[in-house]
Image 1: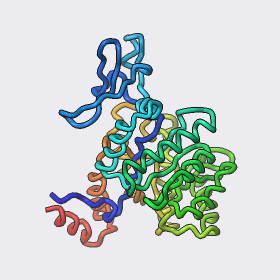
Image 2: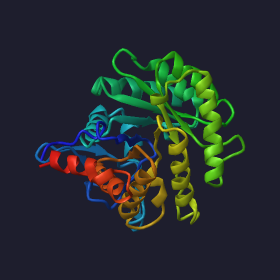
Image 3: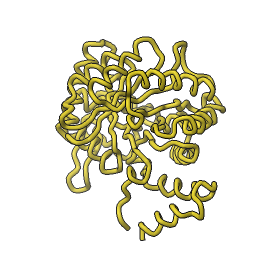
Image 4: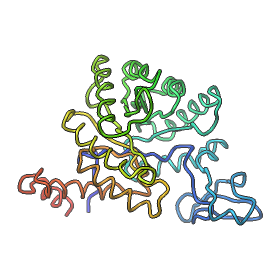
Length: 328
């Protein structure tokens, strides 16, 4: 079976795993202990390497079942380029077109966080020069530090993200100056959106701002924001309804979301994540922010073509048949 070109087929994958908030279970299959030390195994069988995580591993064995290991933060803190290279290459090999970079968990001190972002940008571009990396932070100045360190002659950058919070809209000019892709999320001036209406209203204001800055439609990625359904039973529905409306209003832009957020705190997360991505694609999402290693995106393309045929969006299942024949 030929390998799928997901981008040509209408699905852009944003790899979310180069983020210092990411954790592994302390009792997970990749964790090994030896001589009172703990390690994360990584790499291909026969040539496995180890990342020392002893500082984060619980001293009390009774806590191992519930403890989380911040493996990305451990690797960044140690400047372990081998582990970071493995993470980035794994994301790309699994189908990521854009790889997100976030170091917010490294420090609460702005200057230190800026330095970590500069470092990870340079390392990431040395590992995969042609890959688009999105510079992701809750702090605008950390994003600015990352964009200023980015070698724009190697690949385009993406900015993650603008919103209506104070100071964030200044990043629109930064995107324009550096020919960067621009992510925009639905956070409002007074906090998070409460329903689909507020999501659409906030993103409409941001679309007007991007219009004034002449940001190309194809470079705009709208994120209506995914919240955990364990915290609010309507949150998944709010997101999907907002996607549906935004797709009708803005057919040329990209729509995505941090889809794995929906299952936070619930068991068997992959079932929820896969189902939510599928529902989102049917509603109008053409981009997904996932860990493509844990959630292989090829299956979502199959769901997309099948859903379009089933919902009368593909007359006589023409695109579906063409897709199936291309895979034989």
